Image 1 (cartoon, rainbow, N blue to C red):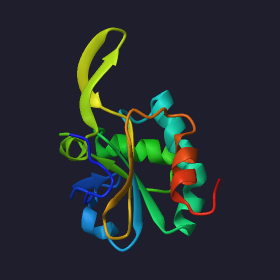
Image 2 (cartoon, helix red, strand yellow; image 1 turned 180 degrees about the vertical axis):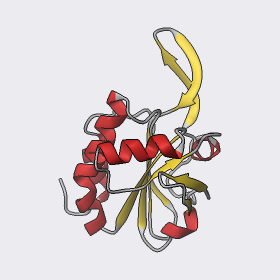
Image 3 (tube, rainbow, N blue to C red; image 1 turned 120 degrees about the horizontal axis):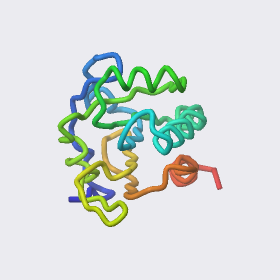
Length: 156
């Protein structure tokens, strides 16, 4: 089920790329961009992560932290983060429970085949944890620019 703007951000407790458990509560009091991607170290996911990396300073200046979430294990996330100098945490959701809570897990279609997987999605929550924006089935390339335009005041 998709999560809509105006709803409270789902709770989560996930290991990050260092193995440290990160929770939803850690981000209360500041905005949070949560993006879900299918698999670290793949071309589309690398493009998306690097776009968010390149926009990271703008998000921080506007009061938003960024986290990326995928089913990958922490070791693979650490390699991904290190290889691409990603300044934000990557969270491991191996059982996809957090993706399900956000509505970012579901049926995907590829070359006529249907299967369950991560639906590339991005959510923006205000400092109080309320979802301000939700995008599903996004394109990896330049998506962070759209998020920045819609989220950061004064950008056009």
